[in-house]
Picture 1 (cartoon, helix red, strand yellow):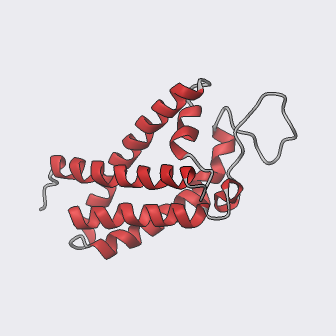
Picture 2 (cartoon, rainbow, N blue to C red; picture 1 turned 45 degrees about the horizontal axis):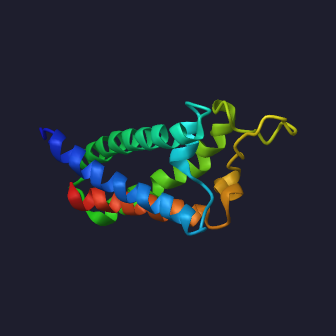
Length: 158
């Protein structure tokens, strides 16, 4: 029976999450996408926009580290890790985020508008829409590529 090397998984998850976060944030700054996922996550916790950025980064890192353990468990159960298997898992992970998780956000997020409600006098975050296309036409490609690189890094590092 394999025992998971927790410090190794944490370090691998930290590296992969840092690269994922840099890619997602960089895509916003380079105008490939308007989806600032750490900000969106943080805005669900506080109305303070500056604090939302900090909290969102913390939540995003926490999720990235948690997912690194899921990837490690998958690699241990299925076969030895490889960058290509990691990239495939990252593609599935990114697809889940785009197709299932993000469309649920308007029903969970206290500061996000819903596609089924009319205008609200309180400024709200725009809902992601299908494949997060409301955040720009390149958002799906950026998100999928970033998640594939996250998985590829975990596959290589684990």
